[in-house]
Image (tube, rainbow, N blue to C red):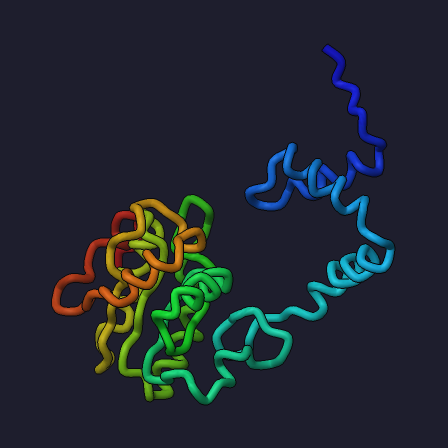
Length: 218
């Protein structure tokens, strides 16, 4: 059987680039590439310019770590958010997932990952110091930990609960409902909304041994 593609090399190259996107297989990438071929030059030029300037335009919010075009993201600069509630997530992608659920009106803090010793990710590699600084400023009544329900996410949640257990605040964990081992970034809005509303308190002996599973023993 011949492996020669019927597509010109320029289209083959575009298909290869598009297939790197999450959830886009070879066949879907081919359909997208052929669809782009039908676009007028004006639209293609606008897309190319947006892609070229993407890293230049999008930065991390100085406060929470969310994606932003300004020093502060729209959520941190909004006067309508509940500033006594702070939700910890692994990545900025998860903020948009939670926002779609419309179940949370507080502020966020992006950790920049989760504890994963096999991948060389320890507490010093996460934005835990920045989180501690925000909590030390006062005004936070509840810290909501919304890491993924896999082993690394659970260990990260327990680590944070113990790290800040001395503070006079409520520390809670989003409820079950999201399948164990799932990435929070892929949760649907309805399930995530229920998980947020049903969050549980992690203090009073509920937060323990998670980080020990990954080798982070105090």
